[in-house]
Image (tube, rainbow, N blue to C red; front, side, top):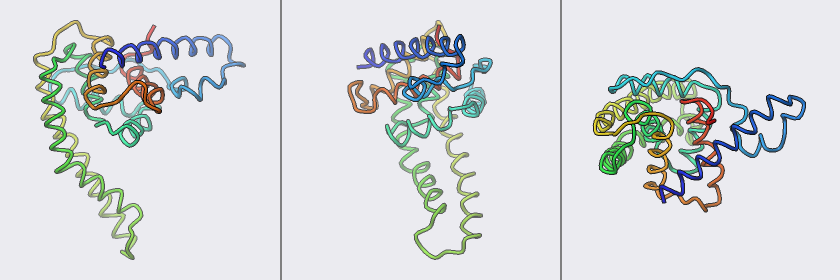
Length: 221
């Protein structure tokens, strides 16, 4: 099933790149329905981030990619619609750029460790943060807002600890590094997560994945 996702990602990336080229060549016709369909044409292409190794390299890469236009909402959709762990999505992409293709054992270990950490730590913090945004009880508004800020900081710290935990697993990855390796890693994770290429939201899932890949490597040629 990973192979199916890999083909899906590559095909969609090429199609989006072609439409982006068409949009640049013909600005007047660039606002087509295809842009709304794919959701990736409006992403600004910036220089590729640094794929430094080590836990801090993974974290800095993630911060840089996440700040790029279109990435944050794409990550939220992959998380809430598809049930993916954004840290694992970023891990798959970073590993491809820093070390190469992940082995099945390394990916399985990253998924297993992250599932425990998400259940015990990140998940409860995230639920608390979201609950504090609009509490169901008549709690003091200012106090809830202050607490939400603190919880948000704690959630971010927990996500950083998760990255530090799984980053060393890339040491066994095989070169060559680059977009192809990142696509293979991401396809393998999506398959491991049980996502089907024939699912109702498969096209949207692939488009959001391509947004992250383009933010990390530039548009596929």
